[in-house]
Image (cartoon, rainbow, N blue to C red):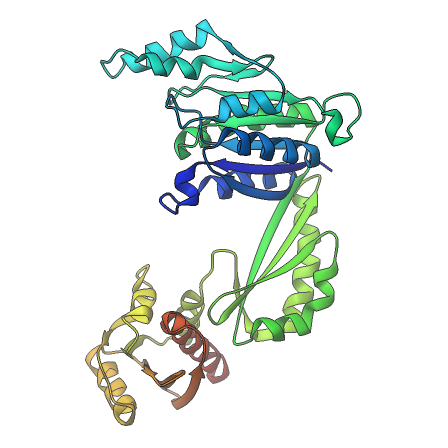
Length: 395
């Protein structure tokens, strides 16, 4: 089993000034290689802390990938930190300096003296030329240190990539992935299938499929959202076909246990499932929402679904919700209409839903006790689930 850890470097990440998108991209690349990612962490621009993080990660994992801190400024300490962690002094590479100079010249500028820092690489490292930036990347073997209780030989490889996402993505795909495949003989992959359930809380889903969450391969995990639970099935295998076969068996079991609570998989959405159901019935939909800030209308209108006619977002009284929903249905010339009203109470929110279809009228009242900021999304999901299930029953 080949394992990896990711270290993103930059004080701006710790301050919340910059969002970390690199970890997600690298994690997915490692997953495609069949590499198990066990940890990801962020470290500020401090040489000693970066070196410590690298040493600790290299003592646990086969692959340590860092991003960031390879620029020309004083607060770009990654090169020095990795040199210290690996006990390999920095060496100047004239050919890298020539490449950096040539790249800067494309902008009609001369390099400043501080940019020469980017041409220093730890001794013995494999240099990765950066065709889309001025910061070269590098790969260095990590020699186990006696203080870590390791034996002789190489314990891990440290791969340092730029923090700029486009640069990192280019070097990862073009140089790092082929290197890892050859170095570790990576012939497996990890395939993930995510099922989506609505109408059941995370605890209820866990109660029904908890034994599957103890499987070793495929693994099964849950992620809760506002009114939706994702069931992730991940399989490691030598081929995509083998992984798909493994996933299919578990997926069939999950679907059998959760029934109509499952509305889709992977990129499929709850609003898409509800509109698809309407289309199969030959119905069209209009919508009236109140107190939700267009949270529902925005989702229903995305993508231009053939079953969607339009709607209105305005303040509506509880006693007139059904009447005004009917008015929207007539004005939009739709065969069905969904009305949703979210009302803030003292310690909770009340959600009123009315559904008008060719089969008749259905109503539902729910209460929500979570964070008020999540109430509109939760209300939209509950209403869409109500619409989806009511349409299925009508059919």
